[in-house]
Amino acid sequence: MSHAHIRKEADCLNCGVLVAERYCPHCGQENLEPKQSAGHLVAHFFNDVTHFDGKFFSSIKLLITKPGFLTEEYLKGRRASYLDPIRMYLFISAVFFLLLMSVFKTPADIISDSSKANAEISGITREHNATVFSSGTGDRLTINDRSYTTVHEYDSVQKALPAAKRDGFINHYFSRKLVAINERYKDRPEGIWPMMKANYFHSLPYMLFISLPIIALLFQLFYIRRKQFYYVSHGIFTIHLYCFVFIALIAINSFAMVGSWGKLVNLVLKVWAIVYLFLAMKRFYKQGGFKTFAKFVIIFFIGSTLVGVLALIFLIKSFLNVA
Image (cartoon, rainbow, N blue to C red; front, side, top):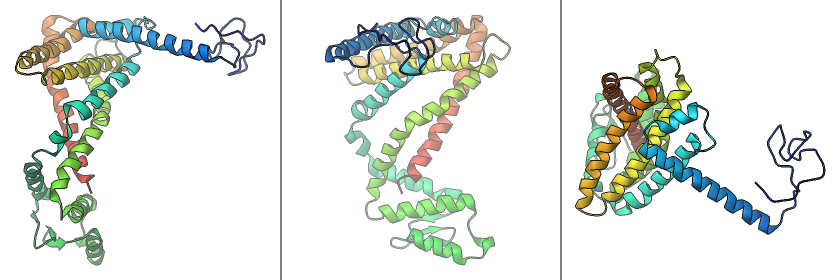
C-alpha cells in the first residue's frame, strides 16, 4: 500500500466515480494526491519489485515441485498468492529466448557448417514442386524448364505467357521467392544459412505461441467427457506446462555447457521433464494411472508431431524470408 497522502476530494481522478474510501470502487485506483515526491516513487518501485519477486519465486517453486498444482489453485480462484499464468509465460519465455539467442547459441554456432547447410538447402529447392531446379548457366536459375536471372525477368516472362501457361498462385509465390533468393545471394551463397537461422530463431516465440492453443484443444478433445473442465481450463494447464518446459530447457542447456558430468544431469532432467508431464496430467485431471498414461502417450505423440509440422512450416518460411 502506498504511503502518499489521500486526496480530500472524493472524485476519482481516473474515472470520476465517487470514492468512499481509499480505492475507487469502479477502476481500483487509489485516491491519492497526484503530486508525489521522489521518495514515494522509489518506495513504490521497491514495493512492486519485492512483491513480484515473492510471488515469482514461490510460484516457480510450486510449478517445479508440484506438477498441476498451480493450475488447480488458479481454477479454484486462489490467484492472489501466485503469479498470473500469462505473466509467468511471458517472463519465462522471454528469458528462455534471450538465453537461447545470446548464450546457448553463439554467433559461431550460427555461422558454423554453413557450406553443408547451403548444400542441404540447395537439395531442398531441387525438390520444389517435383520440378528440376538447378543453378543453370552462370547466375541463371532454371524452374519448370525456364531460366531466370532476376525477379524482374521472371515477372516479365510470366506476363508474356498465355494465362493458361503461367504459374499458378502457389507456384508463382514459391518460384518468385526462389528467384529473389538466387538474385540476392548469387555472389555470396554462404550468407543464406546464417540469415535463415536468424530468421528461424526470431520466429520461434511465434511458433510456440501458435502451438499453445492447439495443444490446449488437444487436451480438451481427450478430456471432453469431463464437463468440469472447459477450454480455458486446458489453456491454463497448457500455459503452466509450457512454463515448466522453458525452465527445463534452460536447465538442460545450461548443464550441457559445464562438461561431461553435465550429461548425466541432462539425462536426469530430460527424464524428469517427461515424468513431470504425466504427473501434471494425473493430478490435474484426476484420472487413474493407466488412463492417464495412455492419454499421455497419445497426446505426447500427437503434440510433438504438431509442433514438428509447425517447426517445418516456420523453417520453410524462414528460408523464403531471406530474400
